[in-house]
Length: 581
Ligand SMILES: [Zn+2]
Ligand SMILES: [Zn+2]
Image (cartoon, rainbow, N blue to C red; front, side):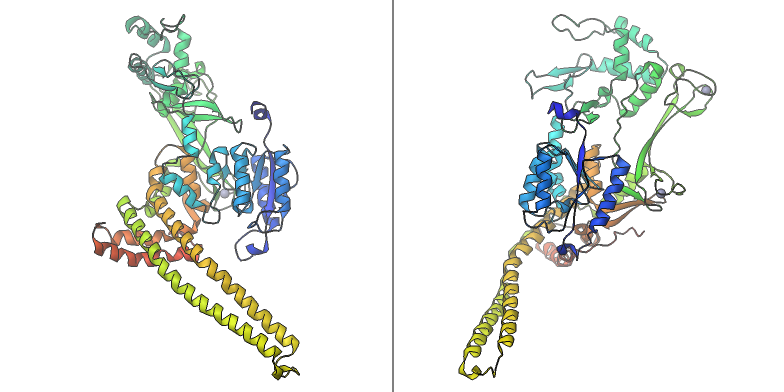
């Protein structure tokens, strides 16, 4: 594994379209190639060879090009996959299983589509394409994001342990955690407080801490137990661990990023950033990797370029009140006061999302603050959120419906069966008449007539057979899907309101595709079809405000509403969600 970390990520691209896609809105192979080409260009991805293309359904295993591609990945020709949509890759459990395994093992480091990226820890998300991929997140989210994301959380302990103010607990590998040091935590926090006022220099705090408070490092076998040095003080004020993060290299992808730790933070990220400014040139350069949750997920509503994020860090000079960007500067450009000597300067940090203007340099769209963007998204989530009491009733209703669906299915089956029987009779009669003496000179049927009629009846019989097999399966699937959606609606907002970027990104990407930003407004053009029940749910919510789950009449009243609310699920259509473009 170590060795492959060093190698570059090389992509194979795969484009597929088949005749079964003709009724669905699937881009042509040429369009798929174009769209991937843009992604390759904008993200500077390395393609190992020309895209693989295939005109074959993915419903059954055994696509030659697809298999060849995976074989070649296993041989090491590439280690990443690019496709227009995940459902281009597989629509059957055999191919899905193989690919998922390859991703889980890191043979495939990443699968990218223009809207999403799947890493080894997301292997579990790669399912349920046919049944609505959003619903898979739903299970994950409602079960507290057990698998993939939890695996990540388990890595949330800095391998090198905690800095002063923390204690390393446990000795065995795998059970090591980091707790606060009751003896030192408050002292270190006091040091931060003093430093953050901007009125105490590092050396002054050092003197206070070592001579007056008696701060010492934790004694180890031979080292420690002594007063910390001055350079140790700078290390403290420079360590992102105190606000809850540490730099971490992903063993699967080799990417370095800031990992959220499981330990209790001592300060906020804002305080940390302010301290870095106050440290001025004495602070080490901060790790450059800063993750933005929603980059690459939205497009500009005016020029269709991608939306990217940017951070603005400014400081207001405490001496002359001049406002300037402090990166790469150690002093005020106007009055030349050194930043580390400013008394309590105001530090401003903003994250903006804005159009890259790659497609149109003159695009007039302005940047939007992340707070404003998230506020709008939370409004969408609030609309689809249902409370847990309501969720319980909804699920009870669905289970009830599943039982009743047995009856519906019986009726449908009976009707299909009688049509099927009629077909059989027609077939027998046709044969009998053709071979009867009355037809000895083809008075009734010529051989051509006979063949044609027989073919028609056989086709009809086959169709009926298929339908009889499909009814139950379809009903089960619809109900299962509905159940998952209700869960999603109940928990999405709660999960969005955490500071976990991965979760936020998942929910943001799940709610719909083709998110655009225009005039500082977020539009969700194609709400996930399964979430179209949203409007009806909202109507239900207002109607059923004083819900009392135990009363039979409430359930009864609700069921009627629900019959109509599940319809869009079955129709599987796309439309706008309450935010007209
Ligand atoms: Zn634009
Ligand atoms: Zn100044």
